[in-house]
Length: 134
Image (tube, rainbow, N blue to C red; front, side, top):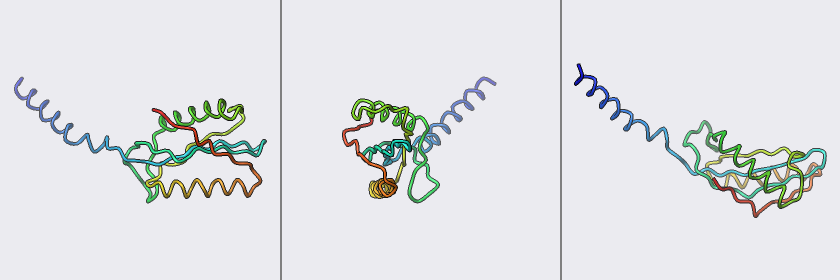
């Protein structure tokens, strides 16, 4: 009986070791962060950021982004916004966009989003010195 339990445990461990790595696979995703204020008609944007994301996708353009990564990026951008731009982050809505599958897609989306806000009369500033660190 003990030998069967040990064999079953080894077999289960081997199955886990073989099947698990594809679940943990990472891909290179391209993201950017935007903070906007309807009241002040201002937006602040980051440059495109490259980050490792889960290799799960339901579209041709982007990967599924983990909530933990989004929250960390938003928090760091808000901190940077307060120190670099001298504004109150609580007055702005901050959101991460992406993770896009290519840098070209991310840059296109960033440009389009910036242009939409400019057409609505917002002032836009790219915080090019923002870097995300995990």
